[in-house]
Length: 250
Length: 343
Image (tube, rainbow over all chains, first blue to last red; front, side, top):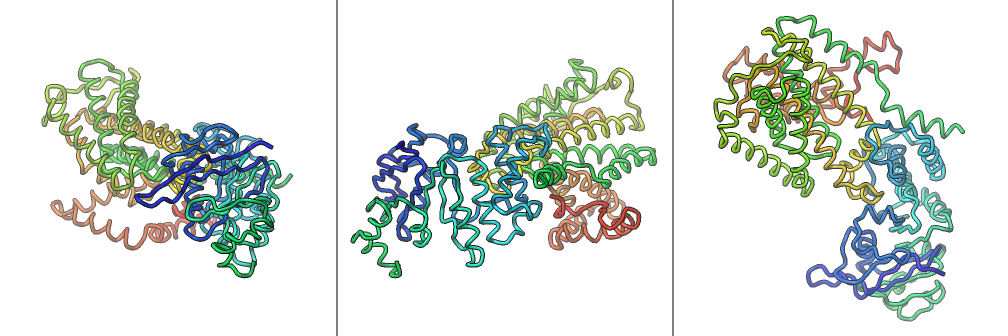
């Protein structure tokens, strides 16, 4: 098995506060890997370093064996690393059609085309149609994103990340804030992600983690507490003490 | 597959010409023929419209605020003036493009300062650059003519065929054609994937980068293009008035431009053009009733627009024309959609 995404001795401090401590993480090709931890464990900081929003103080990040620590956000995307956001980061004034269209165009390296009108490339259109259909967004594709129901926005959030055709996808709490009635669609979309895409799930929701992940890493105070298969992690006394103790129902 | 055809139809829908747009340009051309005594002010409006179109490209599409857009207008104006004065390029159209390119080079160089930072930084940096250029133009008065401006510019006929006349007829049609061509180009650009990526950046730069948009490169590109447009507007100013003086760089010029876009609205290309018409008409009107205090009234109008909200005013203004058009073209036709309805 090859390693899809790896961090080596990652360190990040904000002032005197060490938010990532000597973090070495390996995510295997095709894995459904979850990164869990209590509030303030530094999960989002890790994601931001993986995607290039934040630069680590020291340590390395490797994507499929190649060092990407110094690459900018958009270059990592072109290398095949894409993400969703815990809080929707969408384009309020754009429609789902435009949002997905742009993501597909950028991936094909055609996002800078300034002379060609949108919608004139059959290959782009076909892919847009396929993604919109897969995420149940065809019926709302011409509506402004800001007017969509929250559940649809959440689906769009995942669809945009998928439109970049990632080989490694970082899902940051995909079901956060979704009302119970719309939850099913989101979970189904997550479960239906292609198997060849490696997924690193950052999640709070233990039901989702244990139903989805085949491997779990537990982050506490910015450092790795333990790692293993879901049943091992669930049995781990340390984990129960610091983390699962909070959620007594698991 | 119906989903596919739906997607391609809708994807292309925004770029399609609307009846209202055709009507707008026919009306503009008609005005040029109908009011032969008003060539000068109409030329003024066209020039301001082009200048505002330039600001709309960066403000309305890419979300870059600027209080110093006159920098590029001024550089275009002086470039055209110097080219004509020293007989370097005497043919106006070629000189116009050359002046625009000089402004574009300046835009490219200064874009690196502008793309960094937030709105307030951008306001200050753009303002600073314009002030700097104004001071430079004053300092190097042996080149620019200092406070007297460039004197004795003589314009050659356009393409060697159409001489500028004292009534400003040639000047108006020349400006109108330049505006229309540059408008077509801008329209093409904003409806391209590149234009879409700009709107994505304005909406959410974080997400734009997260889907692989090279944010800085796109901003540099549009800033350079906008500088080219502003330079052309400045060059038109010099060519149609045979003047270039320090006030081409003035803060008032940049600030007026913001007013124009506030009046007309941003992000649908016509805002600058409509805003230019309304702004100049208001200016004329207020100047005729209170020559000294017209700025007071402009200020008042501005406050009202911002307080009431442009979208609401648009709806009121468009109510009657839309009613008429619907009688002829059926329920779905819209004369001119308020900016908020244009996607």
